[in-house]
Length: 356
Image 1 (tube, rainbow, N blue to C red):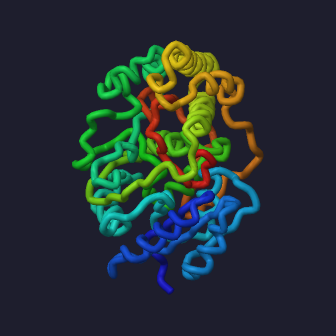
Image 2: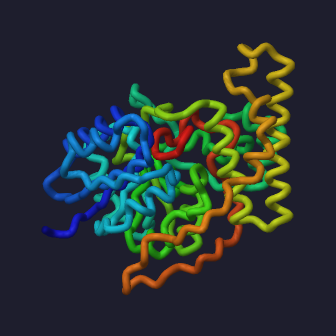
């Protein structure tokens, strides 16, 4: 059997029906000129996801994990044994529009210098949800969160640099980072990077990957030719999701910034959460929004510590013709990324990220 052009990796967590729908639509979207295989990593789901996938899609490579290892670590395990020229990471709560695998690969072959690619992630009505690409975290973006500017002026880039407001996602353009919801990457580059950093359980792991890829010369890019509908909200709670986002953000700054700069960044995150907690206390709950910022503030000792360190190797092993990348984090890049406090309701739901 010939080697596939693309190996699709999907990490699922308690999203049985959504995952089955995604797989069915994805298989139906095949085109004769692009070969792709599919691996699903089930993160110890309790809803019968793994058994249902095995029954309905025996052609799919299924990896059953005994425990929930998180999203990036799940992708790493799914990538082992996948031999497509490219890896495509896809959320199980997405529905292909047209032929996204073919469309992404076609663009990548025309523009090979970018090495990391995404498309459009859409609402059910066909409008952009704005979550397929982001900026990279910076001290300024943390300041705008701490002061509430990112909420009050969320539609302006100067106040919400991580959300990339007013980015026209209907045209091809370079972007600072792409979301793991729909991410195509050269297989060799993924190996060279050592996959996703296992120190992230979930959230900001895709931003970290993009930052490290950029440090090696990649230029992440968005093409409007490829698109998926992103259902979102599949396995998330608003409060739990934001706590996890903040844990990912704290881990990111510790991995990429100097110790004093990281402490300042985490302090600014705490200031922003505290400001919103005060606002919720002073305003009636219905006016303050649905997020319980008071509860999130009370959990600051949890999320400010980031994800606990783990002793897990960096899979997969690089092939003999690809030199492994150094394990040290790249220098800090002061460009925007997904905002920890004002994120999409679900940037990456149901991808093995509990509360994701």
